[in-house]
Image 1: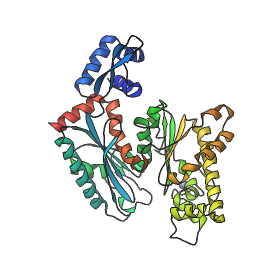
Image 2: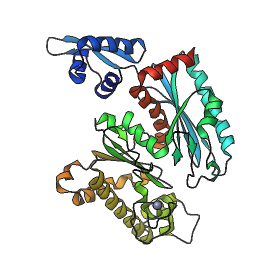
Image 3: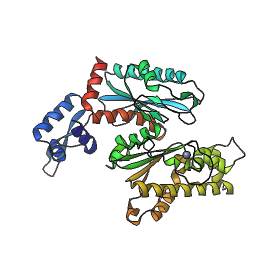
Image 4: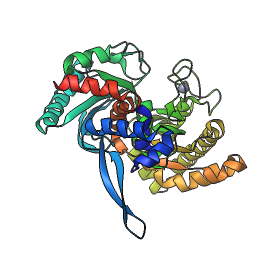
Length: 386
Ligand SMILES: [Zn+2]
């Protein structure tokens, strides 16, 4: 059933005959499996008229409004709760600003209050909640649902986040770190699905620089769960000390604090808005700083294209909207630097969900589980709704 659901998600609208071709299953099996998926409410049938004689064909697609998903994103400066449908469209979103020193239990009470309200809205509309996903800064022990020592997030060290949230909400929580959930938002709901490309690199640029690498549709974890830590590629050997313990990482110079420190080390109060205003006013020091920022970005993206050979690189995060207008220049420089055979495939896209990227990513974790283990997830939904 998982394979059929995945194929429908990938190539919808699709007829049963096309599914037989795609899956190599018998037409009887396809009829039975699609009937089960229709009964579960995951699919709907639409009619498509094709050809000059107007032949009508029954097509299958995801029934996007049948289930709702709740995605929670807890960050260092805010938390957000979104409700999405099955194709990642945001139906409702609430964001609350916090500061780094807010007590985790206080944050969880706030999150739980919003989620409970969303849950009751979903049941008032006679809809079903498919599940709840959580996105939060890593690193974390995914098996135990416990945070390790997330940088710049002092009160959350070794916090048993999953247990605390599950006990407040009475539902199982599926979680991952914010860079990976942001990447998975693209995998299940964004560019990767639209372009039918399942190998890509996602980069988030903000107060830090993080990333997630998706290869053949799977997020790659690596030996120590550190795969795709693109912000910690050394760009200045012997440079500034980084959170990770290394020196001269891309993050130390290319993140928002990194740019501001290079631009104006004396003034600790300047903001990234101030910096880009100075660039627009043609302030020479700001222009020099921006030029170096872009050059580092170009060389790092070239490295990523050469090392990972992805179909595309997707960039998001709080810094990226300021850099977006430079993408044609960045693409041009990267094209000139990658392997000649890869030059025509240098695709750089903007993240699909703006400031809600990791909250939608949290919701995508639930959708990913549904596609991988549809029967288990549906059983759980039915039990929760009894
Ligand atoms: Zn580092």
